[in-house]
Length: 287
Image (cartoon, rainbow, N blue to C red; front, side, top):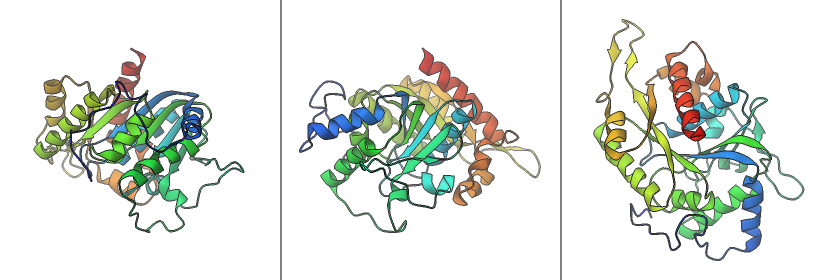
């Protein structure tokens, strides 16, 4: 289904990208849903398995801790993770006019995931091609966000039709690209960078996940993969490097258990690193 790096927009820019078979009413609903959101950030990766969803959740929680109104939206049809990471187990509420109400995680953070709309969280999703891209557009337009400082969108991995649909639907969003230090991931991040250039999406920066960490037993700094690969790739491609997150088994366990508290535990090296990334991101967005 995915066709890497072969997408050529029919119109210049994403805002004017044609959407086959959809009415002006759908476009109006999307515009209305996104109208009062100051910054829209699409967290993406060239491949799965790099911790994209945990990075999206971490960015959202740290931004909300600073008093910002934040929305977190999971649009990964086949592997929605945000509901599990944040411990959302119940189905989301829907208004009388069929608008989806995001779940309040704290006073400043709300989240919505396709998984929270499915009666059976384990059901297989087998939509193909246009059905999936149409569903993504419908989902984006059907969420009632109201006013937000930041909307963090956890996009499907890769550079195929699904992330393309997200990029074309949210025309003023900027990309945060997530990678890991090993060579195969760095070749995939170059595909993500080329994808952003093809669809005229500005890149806010690159985040390296699963970077060097201090051993909890001896304190020695350990690199699971080649150290510094993410920063080297950012420099080589002219992309802003937001920072590196250390590998932390506690974060993995907390996300698997639906206990997001570890994402914003101020005593963890992961949280310190995430705060630096948030600082760098805010600075980038203010320029």
